[in-house]
Image 1 (cartoon, rainbow, N blue to C red):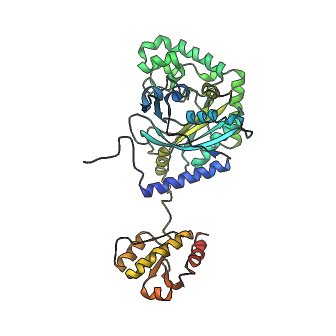
Image 2: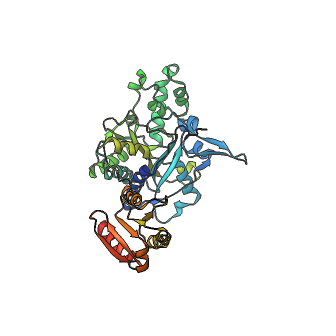
Image 3: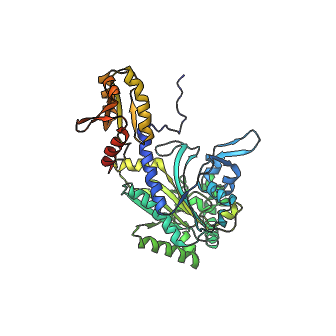
Amino acid sequence: MNIKAPRGTADTLPEEAAKWQFVEETIKNICNRYHFEEIRTPLFEHTELFQRGVGDSTDIVQKEMYTFEDKGGRSLTLKPEGTAPVVRSFVEHKMHGNPKQPVKLYYFAQMFRYERPQKGRMRQLNQFGVEVMGSADPAVDAEVIDLAMTCYRELGLKSLKLVINSLGDKDSRESHRQALVDHFTPYKDELCSDCQTRLKQNPMRILDCKTDKDHPAMKDAPSVLDYLNEDSKAYFEKVKNYLSLMDIDYEVDANLVRGLDYYNHTAFEIMSEAEGFGAITTLAGGGRYNGLIEELGGPETPGIGFGMGLERLMMALEAENIEIPSGEDLDCFIVTVDDEADEASVQIIHDLRTNGIQVDRDYQDRKLKAQFKAADRYHAKYVLILGTTELKKKTINVKEMTTGDQVEVSLTELPGFLKGKLFRRKC
């Protein structure tokens, strides 16, 4: 029976996992500098959370969720996105009462979406995201965008494009909504079935339709920027000004609406312009969601965040030929000459590991020459050679592989000796 990974999923093998760990650690360090704290939410949530939080009219809720009924008859859904679960946790644990405001959180999580798998778009995907709740300051919008751009730049990406838009406040959105309904209603029968539904539920999402993107009505559709009231215009100008102060280049795209119902004011996407990256260029996207926290049972609290697909990040690094470290060389490999030394090596290895030294040995009963070859395959910095003679003297031979130099060291002094050598190398 030939069982393979389910369609739309992938294994991450050890060498690739080491690269992922490097990327994730880099991002975590950046989050720490920006004073964000990590949050972890369950892999699945009550289905109602996404129906209310993401929106019934979205493709995610209508077509892409992995939903199941548990043994108690409750409808549960594997996380398709990260914002609603974090907001649910914010409300449930009354983080709005925390004296330290705003609450600045980040997460790494697996998401699940039932859609057609293609390069960079999986059914099980990995996402990094941030959420800031408790401030309506446009400087926070700029900070969140800056954090995302910093993650990409510190990993080495250069072919980036930031696109921003303003969806306006509630009043601005309502004015624009009515303008869209008036504009698209005469063409209703020419639109796809999804857009016919969106015309009633959320007409702004028609602008984001892939099926009807070339319809003539799209070209002269009302721009949201023409319907911003004075407060919304002033807010957007401040966001743009802060980005300029941080030397962050951007383009304004009035058709950028994002795919989720909870966005208002600032919306943004970061795209890769690397040659050969592919047709789907978006690396990250997000925006402000004032109103979502109230929708999920919390007090009136503004919020903003973004989600960053890690598979797409790895693709972008590859497209720009950026080398990611795939793990350090092994510190030490112990080579044993005979059975007595083989048995004694167990305690020596344990003592070295207890002292924070990375060490491994042969477990295939190989001959001496084959053990040295194994040490080479692991790129061991030092080979520790142990035989009956050394055991009688309570010593071990330490060979530095780059120079070939070899010294005899007392077993009791071995941990300190190796620490000194390895510490100097890492410095």
